[in-house]
Image (cartoon, rainbow over all chains, first blue to last red; front, side, top):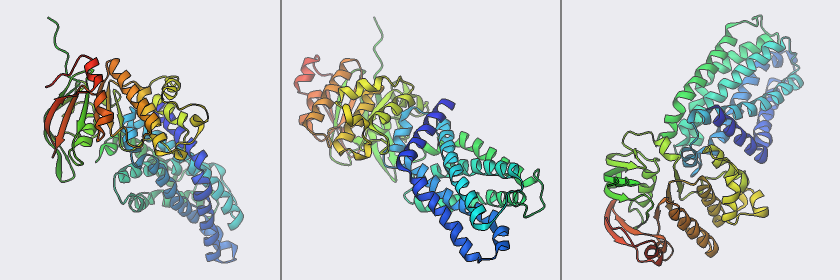
Length: 223
Length: 235
């Protein structure tokens, strides 16, 4: 399972390095969202700083859908789904590999968006530990849930439009908990680093990782 | 007296429903290990469904199906897939990876040494700069050859080839014929669906005709290859 995971992650990341879809299309969309939100909130700094955590996670969530769609499309296209099924790869390994590759891509996206929040919104990081821990847990959770729902939608003709519909409601806990944790990290609320939101992010990530390992195989077999 | 070798493919009243209608409506077919069988029949006859069923890609809806000793009604189909090489309508390749990367990935996924990739690519004349070219930049025929190289490199026990000549030029067809002949000589079983009898019959031991999801005829192939290999076995 782990060997297959490394193999699949390496393949997906190599494809991304070649195609640069995330770097050239997904990341700019995220930055554009931050800029547009900044215009919408006006020139005053206070509302932007207050809104920064939520807007960061909204941007991550919506641009993350694009990254997940891209990842699912690699194995969901004509023939490649059969190719994976015939390859002999462990489905759990495929799930973990694809989740790892999406996680790496989301981390790149989040680093850029975090810089954007600091630059455009004038936010200051008060607790780097909380910020990194919540981002890491939220990112893994989003990648795992996205990969799982990407596989769920893969066999359907309307997969491109269905995936956001399936994924976004499910990812709502990450949006809420991530926002709360970031409010703590940016000092816009008084919640401590050991708050329940961080634990919720961790539980979300663990649940979807476990769920994916167990049901990714049956999902691949679905007609 | 030695026990008779089990057939590589054994279908008894096999039914496979895709969508609302049975694409296979009670197929009886037996393919011996090491035999090369050509499937012929009109579009919609069930050739592709039969190949996909044998590859473990489609569930058996009724009847009996045993492929390489794996009972498709309840067996571990993932184990079967590792022993099968399938060339389908689509090339099953990643456009952004090079030819060499695609073949090596397929081999590593199958748990085989990546070194076998070079030999397979050379046999399919995928050499020089072509190996370093992204598959998305190749012509349909070249993609077909890469997909065939993946099958060759994996050295499967059962080859399932669906319209393998489609898109191939004269040279590609010759390479395909050589690969199939060599695999059969090495003991592999080959089931090949084709609309091009002039290309496929010389490779075959038997020809099975499908229509409406059923086997409507079985005959010996008359090609020189079949004669050279000791004649045909007719079920």
